[in-house]
Structures are given as C-alpha cells and as structure tokens.
Image (tube, rainbow, N blue to C red; front, side):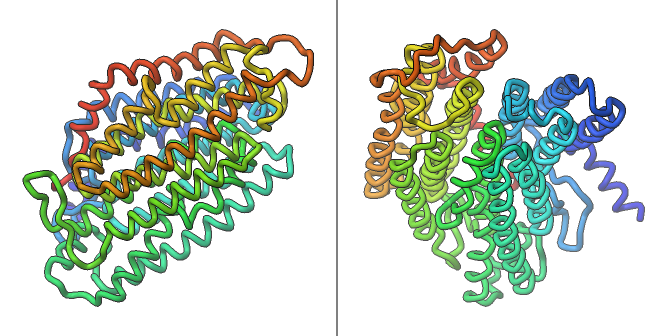
Length: 505
C-alpha cells in the first residue's frame, strides 16, 4: 500500500485547482446551511473568491507537465495529465465562470429563486470541477465520470428557475438527450476496453501501434464515443438539444453552456484523438495519425454539416436566444475544422478562437439578459428602436454580433483569420471556401438584429432603458477586449502558441 499512497500524495500538488474548487463547493453548501433562507447575498462573492484562488493555482501550474494519480499496471500513466494545453482551457473555464457569477448577480431570473441560491452556486462549482477534470482526463473511465458530473449539474441548472413551462421543458429535453448520449458513449467505451484491455488512452495508443485489434469493432466504438463528445460541443447531428435548452434555460446558464461546457468538450475531443491515434508529428507540425480511422474526412463532414445547419437554421429564428443557440452550433463547426487540419497550427487557431469567442458570445448574452430584465422579452421584434431607448446596450450588442460574424477590427476577425490561415496552409481550400460562405450567411441574421434596433421604429413610447454602474462595468469588461484583441492580439497568440503541447508530445 505504500507505493500507491506515495503516488497519491505526490499527485496532490498537481491537483491544487481541483482541490480548491472542491473545498469551495463544500464551503458554499456549509454557508448556505448556516444562513438558512435569508442573507444569501454573500454566496456569489464566496464563489468569486474561490474562482480567483483557483485561477491563481492554474496560472502557477502553467509550465507543469506531469501525470496525477496512482501508478497502474500499464506503467506510469495516471488518470489526469497536467499540461499547458489543459491549463489554457481551465483558464477559459474559470474566466467564463467569473463572468457567469457576475451575470447571476444581475439576472432577474436568478433573483426570483433567491431561496435556492445555495444550490445554484454549488451546482455551478460542481460543473466547474467536472469541466476541469474533463480537460485533463486521460482515462476513459474518468472521462465518462467527469462528463456525467458536468451533465448532472447542468441538467438541474437548465431548469433551475421553474417559473415558466419552457424552463421545465428545457431541463427535461436536456436530460433525455443527455442520458441517451451518455449511454451510447458508455457502450462505446466498453467495446473499446474489450478490444484494448485498458482504459488509458496512452496505453490504447501503444496497443494500436502494435496493430493487434479488430478494425470494425474499433471504428464502431470510436463513433459511439464521439456521440458523447459531439453532444457536449453541439456538433450535428448531436445538436438537437441545443436550441430548446438554450431558449428555455436562464440566460446566465445558457451563456455558460455556450462557452465553458463547449470548451471542456473540445479540449477532451482534441486530447482523445491526438493521444489515442497519433503515430508521429512531422517537422512541419502536422500530425501523422494511425491509419485505423479516417478522422480527417469524418471531422470535415461533421464540421461542414454543423456550420451549415447552424447558420441556415439561425436565419429563421425570431427569438434571440434561439438564434444565438444556432449561431453557437455554427461556431462549433468552424472550430472542428481547426482540429481536422491535424496540426499544431490548427490547434493554436482553436485556442485563439475560444478566447475571443468567450468575450463576444458572453457579451451578446449579457446584453440580451439586461434587455430581457427591462422589457421581459427576447423576441427580435421587441428590439425595435432599442438603439434610441438604450444606445449603450444596442451599440454593444451590435459590436458583439459583428465580432461573431468575424469582421475587422473586432477580435472575432482574428479568430477566423488564424483558422483560415491554418486551412489554407493545409491546402484545404475547398473547405475554407465553404466556411467563408457560411460566414457570409451568418452576416445576414446578425445584421437583421441591427436592423431592428437601429432602423425600425419603437413599438412603444416608453423612455430610455438605463443600466446600473455594476452592469456597465461588466459590459465594458467584455466589450473592451473585443476591440483591444482585434487590434493587438499578440498576447493571445503567444499564450495559445505556448499552450498547444499535450503531455507526452
């Protein structure tokens, strides 16, 4: 027993962020029990403190490369890989979580459930813990458990407010689709374990290198496992839950699912494909995958289908949350293309894209939430004349939508630019053209919102919509980076460049 205990104690230093999140989860539950049904205003500030401390530990570990967990019978491969790639996505998760806590303080939907704020913030920390494990997991069992931890928390959060039928419908649909995807994925994991005799993806790569496997069974198992990944990142045809859940869930939770959950899913997908199927990395940075599954063709098909479906479905939406849901599906399609390049440059493009996507997408949802707080609607027709009633919110939403389209001088342009550079360098010209045409389609439904805000007459004669100083500060914290990173993007590029290496490669 001494050796396993030694590995456990040695691993604790690499798990400081996860341990911190767990401790603050316990603190939130304890404080909520002590406070009872009143005086719960302190809970979001405890949450923010926990996230800042967690972020400090993540930054502290940024140059670390190590396995965390007990040594097993296949060698010194742990359950968790601590590397700069995982830490980059942990930063995205923490940063988006901080903004979501700030959103929640201002959200009327969340305020209406004041007596259940303890559960609300505890569930968010449960999601954070699950997502941080997702981005670092290198064992199929832990991958499944971490996905389930995220899913169970998000199922409840999606139906948290309970004040509308669509809220309950969102939660019910989410859990039905999620359970099906989870079961299919677990079946795929069981098949893969039966073929390989191990659940560690590094060890699976070793078995694949030796060629001792059944090709058909391997293909079936990987497709089934991809179902779970595809569900998390809202890739077609596993996207069906996204529009209904995004529309019915509280806006703060919708924004959270669109960034943090998607980021964790992408990190997991990238790690799974690269580590499990890599054969070598060329001097030009392109991956040479084992010829067992044609991942490139598969991902390109999924990507084109995802972005095309997302963009064209968004054209017909009259609810802004639903439109942003389909927009989120389309953006997932763009980012899958970065993975399909199978190069360090493609991964760097995804990392840059996610960082700028965080600010512009959270910003769009924040403005929608602030407007919904005042007018009680998310319908595009009710945005008529908002450019005159609330110029700051209308202009800010316009900037976020222009950035989501990918037009200069916003940060969204930089995200798309590096993605298209990676595609062109990989000689994927046709795919790049299809992605560019999809971007043109997206411009239509984003501009449609601007038309309603600035060119249509107000439906009512109500006065201007004002927002508080705290909300203005949060809005500026999202808006300013969209402009700054659109003009000076070197810090993000350098951070992404230093974060593309996975442990062992």
